Length: 343
Image 1 (cartoon, rainbow, N blue to C red):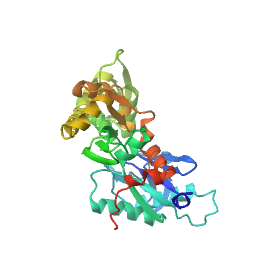
Image 2 (cartoon, rainbow, N blue to C red; image 1 turned 90 degrees about the vertical axis):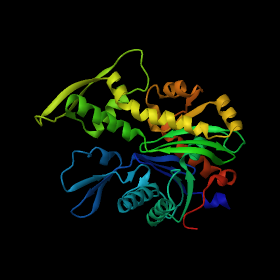
Image 3 (cartoon, one colour; image 1 turned 90 degrees about the horizontal axis):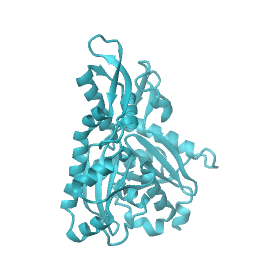
Image 4 (cartoon, rainbow, N blue to C red; image 1 turned 30 degrees about the vertical axis):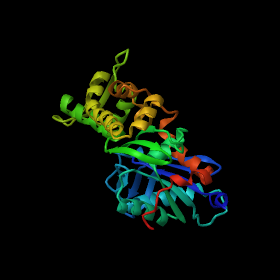
């Protein structure tokens, strides 16, 4: 019965920086930035995803480029609903369904309130879903990393997203200890913007800061120093100006935020029962999420906690891969579904 229920349904990872959709039997079909461009003159969507991201900071006044999620939580319900409706229609465009009404398994951050959880469910339902099931992001990520979450073994996963970082110890399909931090890839980019403004007197755009982070950003010293030319607006003259930033300077910019993450990992371990800590010491800490791709982050955390740290394969898609596994094997994994706020 459950196989029939989920035969054409989807998993949705609605993140701060990216939205990803997995269709049962097809795999990952949507992987786009969570950005929407709207024409304010007629209230119509101009673009979503990568096309909208390219407009960020470059659009005329009547085109509003919006990131509708902040720290993993929906901040603009109307825009999110329109975006999801477009995505659902796109996913079903090659099917015989005239009005797509999929059942959706959606990821949800750990520390959302019941109101925020209900809002997420309502938006997905209003966008065209028939039923919504919720899974906590770290649990989905752990399943995506193929960790034995169903066993009585301590699994420590650090899911580093765009808006939030979630650290969780998982055993027997549930979370034993956790820490949720409003630190993610977007904050690291903001750290770089603030550093360049304060030390160079130049204002960078968000996409430029992101490029710096990806190209020469690191959490630990690298064998060969790197530098990068960046362009922004001089805060004194108001004119374009080019400066050179080094990997050491970028590391100095982001280290305060990375320290919050390492302390969060330590705090989570300290609040974990001793038997599970023993498992974590033997098995190590698992890093996932797009922000975990920062070079040397595993080394930094390992140095601070003296436990092995491993990066999962393709960390950016660990959550949606895990939710895809839940769709494909719902009978065995349905116990990870959390209660609905609508009940």
